[in-house]
Amino acid sequence: MERTQTYDPIPELVVGVRNLAALSVCRNYADAVYFSIDRFSLRARAQDITLMNLDAFVEQVRACGLKSYLAINTVIYPDDLLDVGDVIETASSTGVDALIAWDPAVITRAVDAGLRVHISTQANVSNPECAEFYGSLGASRVVLSRELNLKQIRNIREQTNMELEVFVHGAMCHAISGRCYLSAFLLGRSGNCGDCTQPCRWQWTLQGENGEQMELGGKYLLSARDLCMIENIPEILEAGVDALKVEGRLRNAGYTAAVSRCYREALDSCSQGLYTPERAREWKERMELQFNRGFSTGFYFGVPGPDGLGYESDMNASPVKREAVGEVRNYFPKHGSAAVRVLEQELALGDKIIIEGDSTYIEQEVGSLMRGGESILKAVKGQDVGLGVDGRVRKNDRVFKVVST
Image (cartoon, rainbow, N blue to C red):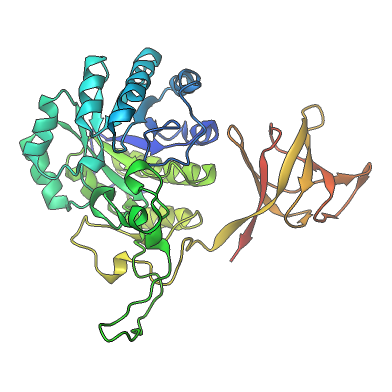
């Protein structure tokens, strides 16, 4: 293969995870993982990691050879301060490698506890003096605003020695640095407290001053496409950033596996002088098979126009999707099989399936089905069946069928 330009050093790859399953599938690709616990997170639905099991989770991250970054990035109210103190104390005792924060109360308490602090993108850091300000508070890294272009990032790099981290993949918020009030206004559920209902993903109708509805070329007028910079990794590296961030703390483990692997391969290719546009397109095509809202380059090359919005798709633009089938009721390691209760739809030999839980992620085809001691070709809704599995599964793990749309 013809060699291209090599890049050195290669930035750290930071991947968002929600549980042990997501950690297990990105352990060979990420350099660090970021996550949240069951409070003070902009992903309030990510409840698998708690204050009680934080120590065990961080130990698992360490065993994978990765760094652990804990996000505390919601609005902090007076009544929250005591609980925040408990979280910071626990994070310090467990050996978390850094805290991701933007509230000065969290920053100063974390620094006093001896923790490294990475400034969240919620702080909307958009210039070098702002980065230096947070450095004066004791922070070591800033996650830059997602609304910056490459020229602005290079300018910041030239004027500060602070570590710089940028998002390269994942969901884009319609509001500046995620500071959105639409969900709170409409439903009383605050996005700035991690409880966003995502009204920007709803169907909207544009109405003129005369009350008449306007015909437009799409229905989802506020839904931003996902960020995807896999085809522009060299430009990102030339900007001199220290870390690349993959968003996705609420995505399934299959997404985490595919996206982290593609960006790892892209970074390694840049290091080895093997990165090419053709390979980048292949990585992008692989990631398009996972949940996505369509891809764009965000603000990196200027303020996005219509190509930055997914007018026609409500949520998932992938040509494949996961459909619920049932759940695991028991696991029999000696036989390599599981008892599965079929709840939503039939399951047949040859179906491509995913088995997923807090600590489980398996992709496989259905190779054997048993019922009443006999092999069967298909199980229908309401039946309990034996399913041959390719690895360890656990009670209450969910079974999904992978189908083309």
